[in-house]
Image (cartoon, rainbow, N blue to C red; front, side, top):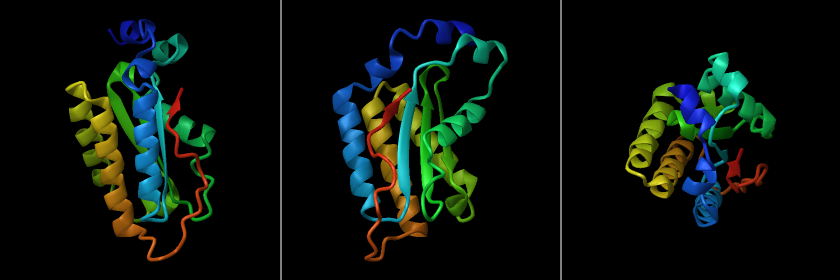
Length: 162
């Protein structure tokens, strides 16, 4: 069944995340980053390639690959966070750089993923994405508050459609 969902993608990412939704996510990320020292990157992929599916590639492995490819690890304070959405598998993964991973429990990221997944299941991709960004914002403000420091915008705020 998984292979069929990936084979018949038909523009799933663009359909669920059109330009106005990407704009809203971008603005939410930019506003969030003014309040903490983290960098949030939001990436959406409709499906994986046939070779990845046949090999049984884990979504977490793909998320780590995207984390590296988009250079989320490349921030001065190691405070990058990737939100990776794989629509064909209805899966969300959050990968945090080592500076954040040292302070934030994996359970907090799972809660954010569940929050988003519930909204996505209801067909509310924009609301789910924005709720996820806000939940990540709350975590980062708690652990990495800006406290008057300027957060240099080291990574693009615009969501990436892979």
